[in-house]
Image (cartoon, rainbow, N blue to C red):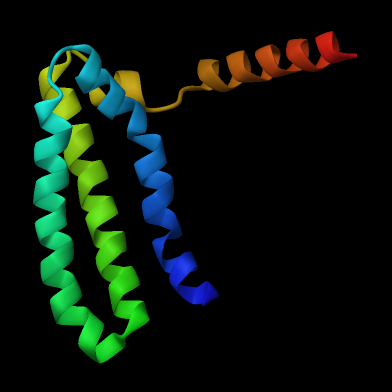
Length: 114
């Protein structure tokens, strides 16, 4: 039972990471975008489940779910970049300054707890 979880885990991480993008769409009045993406990826998941589940069983179902989550995340990022004024490399990729900011912020929080 653990192996299917390890198969879908990357998709769950991606879905969690892109959940803020869903909230962005809701906040700017474009709530239909995540709904359309979810419908499209549901179709992908159903088709893949019919193809992969009979021969592979639970592993095939996990793979189809992984593909649906991954494709939804990729489509959400693409839609976000098209709708917002963000630039992918400049705004979505961690830079050295971001890591140093996180380190300073975390150390201050830790010291404040003491």
